[in-house]
Length: 309
Image (cartoon, rainbow, N blue to C red; front, side, top):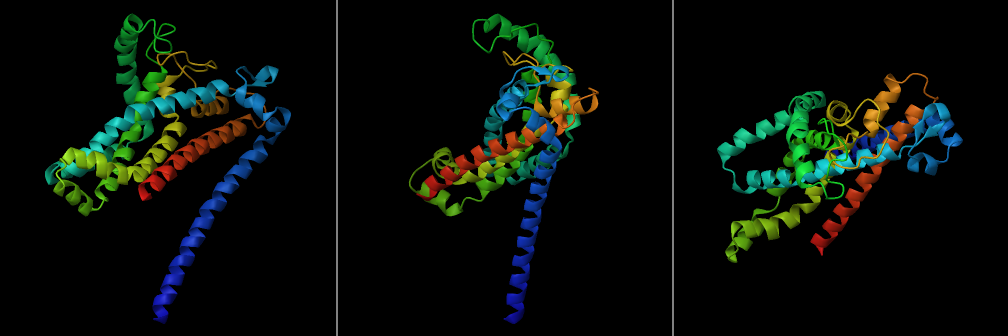
């Protein structure tokens, strides 16, 4: 009995130490970034930095709004493209696929999850960018010319917000599918049997019993996908942006500028940047991702509360 309690206390203490170490590491990163970015943050009001649209470092103008809007749109568009495909794939794997299909598809999903982002970026510039430039953009110009925000504003070369979002969607699909499939399979089998015993079809059981119970876990997978999509540089570098484009996108066919790519540009390609602006940009990106995660976590908490009620 004594050894059992000792092991339990040891495991509990180890978990608390690891959790505290992760928390302290996060705080250390935030504090280090703030200390380095303090010269810019004290010289310019935070509201001016976040809402300004002019980016002229030589004149002392540092407007982050185009980069924030670009990051937001490319992330939301990627999630909108990926989520339906991921949910349907996870439902098939968890509820309909046989053992052979699962044994074939699950390892492929794991392989896709392990591919580096630069490989996805190269695939995007070789396949998706020509697809958007030669086919999707002309079709949108012909059929959606009068639809606000959907019609191309300028001539589209293929390097666009849509191309970047498609690559990001391909990147996050394996993560969402893997999490959603495990969550769906974790729903108690007794719930499915009770629904089927009442005369419901398999799809009705999935839609009204399995999905509501698995929703909090699915949202968790979406949170992880949002964090990765918002912080990726290679897909935007290869497919979504020109070298430097500080303006707001007017349609999905326009090139855009996201915060991760902006950090790469001002850190490696533009000499003579004021001290602290790179770290301030990283701090803004960190706050942006944290804010999106908090919103998604709030939605998950409400979904969990409704399920318990």
